[in-house]
Each structure stands twice: as structure tokens, then as C-alpha cells.
Length: 266
Image (cartoon, rainbow, N blue to C red; front, side):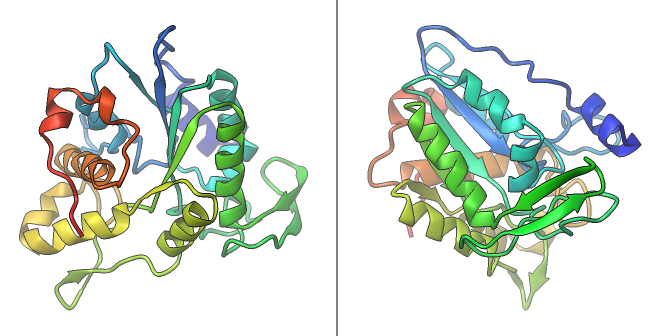
């Protein structure tokens, strides 16, 4: 097993949160911007999936953060992480997915080999994966999202798609928006008739309003991984996006904190 993969598995062990019989679960799948560390220690980093749980009533629903650092839409599937989630999903559950940060990487290098093909089409490319030592058919980013959506629906769950949270990259006083993965996420959600949470735009607007000085402490590294304060802001924006939907199926499960949160208004 590669040393890097071993370190990741130690840092993010197998799923520790447990199902609660008799009530629905909200599964979160994605990368390190959703689940990353504990917010303590040297790296001071946390993903938005952890603080999101406080917005829901644990007596009504469990928030199960199954995201894993370093994963793309492709490797979340090929490493079996999605199968673990899918095996546990039951009718009435929810799945919120957010990918894109790691999908732009190489398809078949010796270090990560985690990229997906660009776009939302049906194109494929066959590779010999130097890490897994297996022959693999690589699909587009949109194909993997459609796979998660179709599988969740087949199990009777309600899937929702998020655009990737923005990086801390400024241009002319504004946060740079994603011109590709956010767009493709929206296109897939629309085509598959599932709810879309535009975190890329919603959070970018919050950063724009705050300005560079106040946004700086919201990150635990140069531009990608949030600090605990940044994770809290991003979780708040997830709830704002949910409350801004024409119909929010998660509304009955909000805690007092969730009910009190503001909704996003375009």
C-alpha cells in the first residue's frame, strides 16, 4: 500500500458514525472541504460537514459525514467509498454530494491518479492505473455525479448536488468563481431533476462582502481548506441554500439553530 494512502486511511479511518434505526439519515459525500481533520492541532482545518450537524435535530435525523479527504468523484467510487454508503442507504434517506476540487488532476500519474474527464458527457478513456495496478475506464465528472444520483434514487433516497466551495483566490477584489465544475454540477442537477445548492456562488458572495482581511482567518492553509471558523460559515451557507429552495425536503428536520438560520435570496 502506498505510504500516502496509508497515512490518509489512518487520518480518516473507516466510518465511525452509526445509523439510527427508525429515522432518516443525511449522508454527506465529497472531499476534504466537506470532511477534513478535527479543527484542532497544527493544521487548524475543518470541513463544513462537521458543523452542519448542529443545524439538524438528532432526534429526527442523523447527519453522517462520509466525505473523505483527497477524493475526486472518480476515486470516491473506485475506492469503494460510495459502495459503503450505498449499502447503508435506506428509503427516506438523503444524500448531499460535493465534488470538483480533485477532479482536475491527472488520470494516471504515479502519485494520485484521481482525475476525471472534463465535462458531463459519456466520453471515456481506458488507462492502466499505476497505483491500483488495474485497468480502468475513466468517465467524465458529470457521469460520476449521475452515477451517485441514480444509485441513491434506486435505494429510495433523495440526492442533492452542491457546487464546490470556492477557493480563497481573489481577482480585482472578488473571489474567483468556478467556471467549470460548478457549471457542470448545476447542469447535472438540472438534467437529473434533483435539487442544486450553489455553494460556489453563495459562499463567494459572502467572502466578497467580508473582504480579504476578514476572509483570511477563515482558511487553515493558503487557499483551499477552511479553518473551524470558515467551516462554520460554509455550513451556514449550506443551510441558507437549502432554505432558499422552492421546496426543501430537509426543513422538517432542522434544529432550533437550523430554523433560525437565514435563507439565501438571489
